Structures are given as C-alpha cells and as structure tokens.
Length: 120
Image (tube, rainbow, N blue to C red; front, side, top):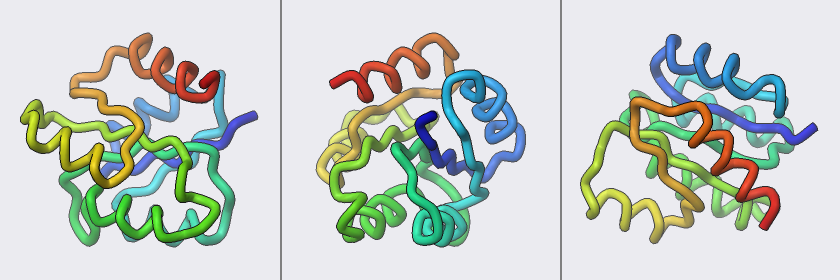
C-alpha cells in the first residue's frame, strides 16, 4: 500500500484526509511542515499532500526542504489550499509540486489526482 504524508494545521482537515484516503493508502498526518519534515526523515513516503499556510513551517518551505533530500527529489507532491491565485500555483510548480487542489476538497477529485500521479 502506498504511503502518503498529509500535512495541514487543521485537525479537522487531517481527519478528513485520513478518512477520505485510508481505504486506498496508508496516510500519516502532520500538523505543520516542521513535523512533516521530521516524519519524512524517519519514514519513507510515496507522496505528499500539503497545505500552504501553516505555523512553524509553511508548505513552500516544506517542499524546499523535502526536495533537497535525495530520495524525495521527484516524489509526487500535491498542494492543498484555499488560495486560487495563479501566482501561488506557479510558485508551487516552480518548487516541484506535482498537483494543486483548491479547498473545499472534492474527495473524488483528490483521489483521482493521486491515482493519476501514481499511474504516470
């Protein structure tokens, strides 16, 4: 089973992501980028789902750090955000994001995107 690291500062969103995806993937939650980075250094993940605006370490800083780790240079990375700004999407892409989902999340859209990423 593929292992996903879900990072969001909202406990409700983390619970929702875990419940939404746990039939298809092993989901590990993290409350911010700092915790996510610590977990990613201890355990191997197949993909990341990450909010942008979080305390301690935001999503942009998290992807900057994670892409410096050799075995995570090309790991699929999906940003979850309420930000619809095209500039923010371009920043995410330039940092190595694979996909982008705008909140509120439609479960079928997120699952479809993750499955598509793993199939490619």
